[in-house]
Image (cartoon, rainbow, N blue to C red):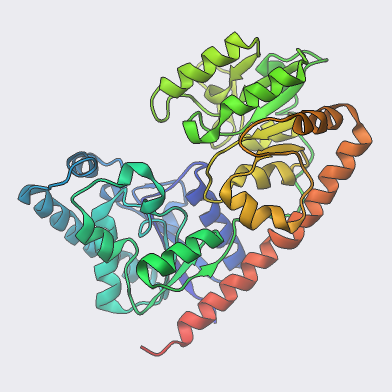
Length: 420
């Protein structure tokens, strides 16, 4: 029986992992005739199927003020507690309105019960589920115990109650095996593991005329090699390893292009890797100002491209992250048939690498074997083609839409047949 599914988060807009994975879930649910509706503080979904509540956005001024009083402190004032409760009560009323307006039968909470960026919203969702026993799925992308900045706070009562909550009508979904074990150990909650996916049964279309000039716009010449770092510029992305790789390659035609704007978490790391690239003689360029959620023109009349435009132009993708909840950039590179060099971050080592992908892998540093493998990829077209085709087939088996569809069918069938 088709369901009316309500997605809830602080934001469904842009290219963040939560927004992207939620859209994929909705697409797969649509194949089984389930209709999706959206609740959040920032939305780029159609107004006819969404309900925008600005106060539910994690950077709403009221929530920003609350967060400023919480993180890094060990005591909270009575005033902060009052404002958390008042905002939670208001948001709970909007949840009732959301469910009634669209006649929802299942809720999917995307990361709002996982990482405490909006405590009042999580409290509101928890109370709503306890009051209604409405069938719901909590899709957890990254828990608070995985982030250093959430370790000190006067918030243990709310963390224990709502991140995540123990609601009888709520099923939990995680994106890697380590999170599944930690959730069981810390909260005594069982969960289903559903990895991030891409539609590998529907390959990407060839590059079109719009993106045909992207190499020129980046500033590359005909003989240059496009090495893409498709991440934000923050310490856990390990961009210094990409710089070291290019230094050891010793090929001046290799240009390192960073896809995202710098300064997302301050400028100390940005300045450090920029200076490192300069000192090592590596041509590193930031292209984030020309990358957006959709194609358009900026204020100067220049083209704005998407990440999907960048991948086909790349000769190599570097992904030297030290930690990822899953690692969407890995799947995106495989999907666009671009060879990728990866650091063996924990989730990759445990969940992804055993599937049988073939690629250069570093163990926290760039060694001679990695350099030799990358050099062969860049110079041997036959080897490169065989490698990317092999990886595409592995990903189609383990990380494509049929995997997600099967998991969602089981989840919805289970949650709709439970007796409370």
